[in-house]
Image (cartoon, rainbow, N blue to C red; front, side, top):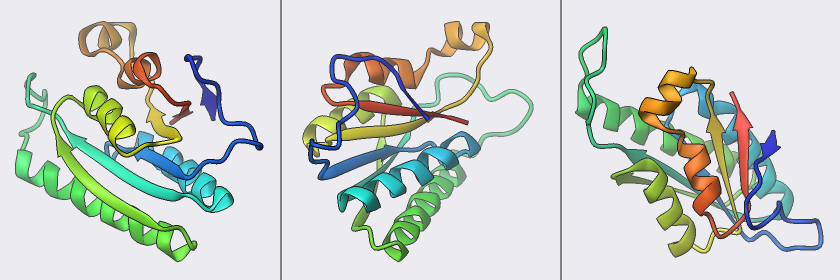
Length: 153
C-alpha cells in the first residue's frame, strides 16, 4: 500500500479517522484496496462508505460486447457484498452507486461525505493507456482535500 503525495499526508495515529471512503471499480485491482479500507475502518472504528462509479461509455470496449446494465449490476452486487463483508468484521458500512466521471465523482463523494481518507486501487497501465485514459488515482490524489491511500493491484 502506498500513499501518493498530496496536500494532506496520511492521517497519523493521533488524528481521528471517522469516515473512510473506499472507491472501487469492482475489478480485481480494487480487491486489495477493499481489504485495506475495511482493515482501516475496523482499526479506527470508522464508518466505511463504499462507492462505485459507473462511467459514461466514451470508448468502445475492444474484443467483447459491452452490456452497460450488466456492468451496473455487477458493480452494485460487488459493493453490497463488500458492505456485508465489512459488517461481518464489525464495521458500519454503506454502499452507493453513482454515475459519471469516476475521478470527479470520488472527489465529490469525499467532500460531501466528509471522508477523512480515501482508499482506492491502482492498476498498472501502459504509458499509452495512461495517456489515452488518464489515471483515476492520480486525478483523485491531485484534487483531494483529505489523504488518499492508493493500493497497487
